[in-house]
Amino acid sequence: MLQKNNDNLIYPPIIVENQPITYTAALARVEEIVASLESGTCDIDQLCERIAEAKRLLTFCAKRLEDVDAQYELLMKSDDGQG
Image 1: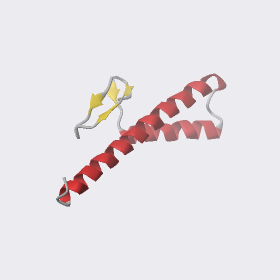
Image 2: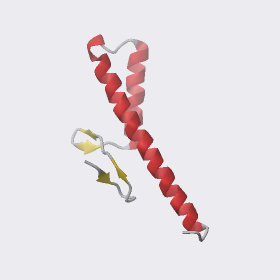
Image 3: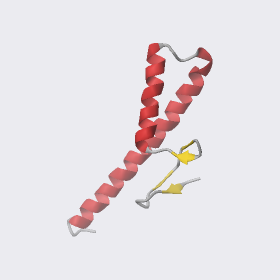
Image 4: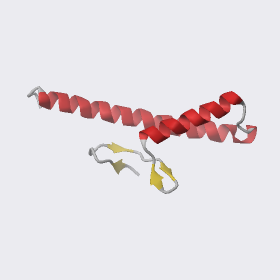
């Protein structure tokens, strides 16, 4: 399902504990996952699950950055009298 955010941009939400996750929270979780992988504290049985989670979160973050960039471009065009 796609969700419209407050800026009228559409992106696929990631739900954690019944709440959509923010870009900042997603990036922080990726950093936690990387730290656990680098330190060796990640259980081998959870390795694939953690990597898949990190991949989903990074995809989400990349999409949010693309959306913000697109919105920025629209704002800049309208400020220049082009939009």
